[in-house]
Amino acid sequence: MYYLYHIPGKKIGVTRNLNSRVTEQQGYAPDEYEVLLTSDDIDKISNMEIELQKSYGYKVDRQSYKNLIKSNKEMKLNITEQTTTFPMPLNKLKDRLEDSIGLTWETTFGKFKVTKDNYKDLFNNAVTSMYNSNRCFVYNKKLVELSNKEEFYKEDEVNVFDLIRDWAQVRGIYNKGDSKTQYMKLMEEVGELAEALLENDRAETQDAIGDIMVVLTNLAHMQQMKIEDCVTSAYDEIKNRKGSMVNGTFVKRSLK
Image 1: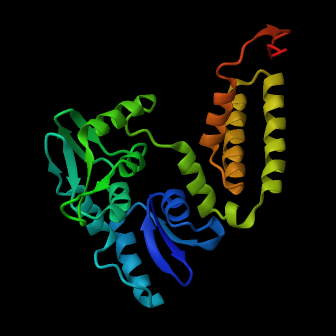
Image 2 (image 1 turned 180 degrees about the vertical axis):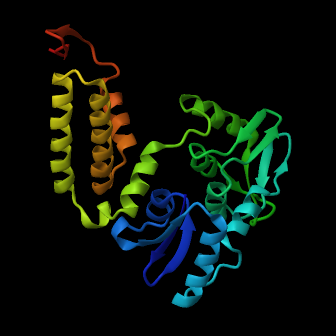
Image 3 (image 1 turned 90 degrees about the vertical axis):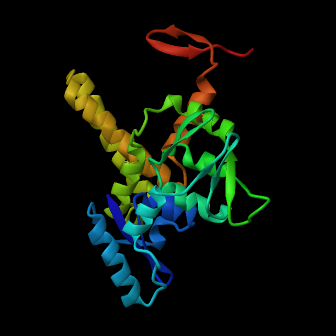
């Protein structure tokens, strides 16, 4: 799905990931921009972006979104035994990589594929070429390390939390709601989970747990957090915890 977004007084653009592109990269809070159109038709969304940029008097992109995506996927890389060099300055690399997810190439250390889980790490390990400031590179050995780092993830797996955040943004939950309303919604969903457990209703239990995760994702976002970071932090705290089961509950061992 493509999103045509508007930052009033600034710009109109297109992205596939509102949270990553507009909030994290450009630094705009969800209530500082609006979604004008959503579509899975890249031609429609690209043409509308150019038309609206003109009508609002904003800077018009030299390339339409669809042509930019095409050129990104055809990015000319210079691959040597030790490095992969990108034909652009370092400050342009991150956006190009995001739009080039799926791009794959072979190195002497193995094959590398740009994914939603590794493109930021790739950017963070890239450096400007000492011979040409309009080019940057990354060591191929590091690329293999980044690939191995992804073994926790399934290749091309969609981050469902990103989909939830995009869904909530489009429906105005972040702009018009607040943390208190999400907390009340959480209590409602917890009540439905309790009822499903008491009735031993497996389908309703699964539905309630899913609804709870949706609410928690939105609540975390409203607090300028990511649900993924919250879960990781919790796991890091408990992973080495020792204790025993008491009356059906795990009780951690006292440090005394």
